[in-house]
Length: 118
Length: 118
DNA sequence: GGTAGAACCTACCAAAAGGTAAGGGCAAGA
DNA sequence: TCTTGCCCTTACCTTTTGGTAGGTTCTACC
Picture 1 (cartoon, rainbow over the protein chains, first blue to last red):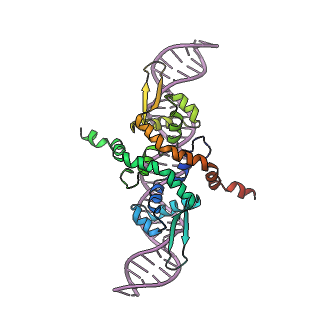
Picture 2 (cartoon, rainbow over the protein chains, first blue to last red):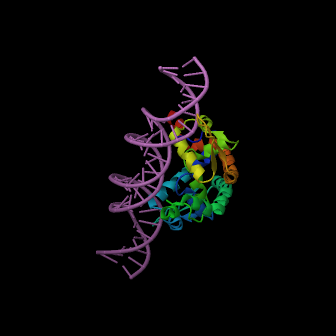
Picture 3 (cartoon, each protein chain N blue to C red):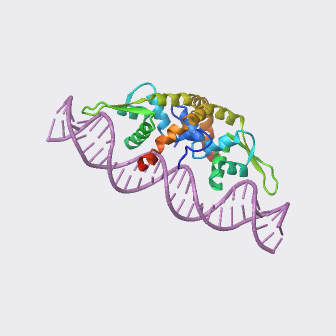
């Protein structure tokens, strides 16, 4: 499924930030280097397995940098790369759009509550 | 899986444009009202079933407007709603980012080609 | 000694998304 | 009459994704 070969750049971006948790991870990491367990706590509701998967993918894409402090017990943190920062910048308007339209969208996605009771 | 209840607006946006084909559909429809069969041809590689699914979802979200010309054989076209237009505007930077970084990203996603031949 | 917490990994499972193949009603064209 | 194109629908299957439950290595704390 190569999504990097179309006329629309959105597919490229989606290939990078697609997935249930990646945008959220980026959101919580943009404030600075963040430890694994801290990300887990901030994101909330994500399993360790999935968090690691997403983190690894982001690192592979050169969006995040993984820093292992080689000590025991382990200390690892993740930070945006310069490339990752260009991505979160490009993401900003969409993020604002989402924030501005959250209620609208969630209302459209769950009209069933009223409909069912009617 | 309600993704409209997080502090990050990206989740809202992803709830709307998530899916393999939605961004591409939006891309091909933004030039004006487009017929079903025309979208299918432009997008290329999508099955009718899936195209309809995505189109329906987009219509439900009020991003697209479906216009049925009630004639036989059927004529139907899809156009951006004003709401949909605000979305594609918010999407533009990300689209540019993707276009600018397509090669970079696809190189990262498929480094195996060179590695295998080496 | 037992437990907790750090940052993972491994199997196994379930749900969602996507894809294939077929059909359907109708009209225009061969 | 037969086919083609239009805009879908349905049933079924595969792939992808996400989730659960366990384990690991090590230290620090009670």
